[in-house]
Length: 265
Image: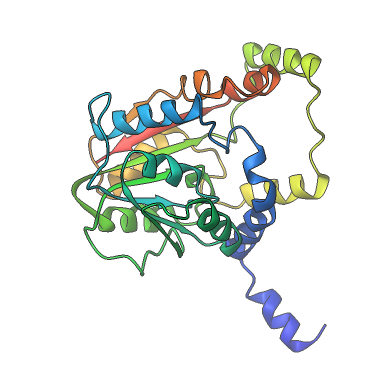
């Protein structure tokens, strides 16, 4: 190994590993029903959740709202926000993910920026009415730095909507084991790629929420960063009715997961 290669390896940290992991999954990211948002059932449920988080009327929209989609990935949540009339900025630190989002959102009131979720240097203070992020918080290496930045870019009274889960959940309940068993009878689960699975757990064991991301822990950290009025929102319909077009086996596996939505202002 050359000196240059040794230096590059020494400078390759956890964040680089996380970025490369998600970049490698970009091509198949939308294949998962928990990532791709179905037009017929998923979109109405996402719109309902976003309206609830923002305190909007049942048919209200986000016209005139500046919204930040953090870790936007392939642009699915941004697509939901644009559908409600928002002007959306999507950030991700995977150029591979952003490239897919840019193609998907051509012609929409959307722009994409290559940016670290924990250091929003490209974004001004007090600019956004709403910040949304899905399946990101569990991967943060410095949650307090991230939450402080997210609060900085929000307007006074602005809100944050977090959709995530505890992927280091305790032993599965009897109900979840029954669900998984029935799902496997209907449709055997795909055997995960060994190397990909090893990378996932290697990352999970070293992030800040390696012990599990729970609503209680999330609320404590958000309040430390200056957020208030923290409350849980139900995701039962999001991963139930919103996934009607997924196979029954997929729905049985996903609806029982330790998922939650959290809003704070």
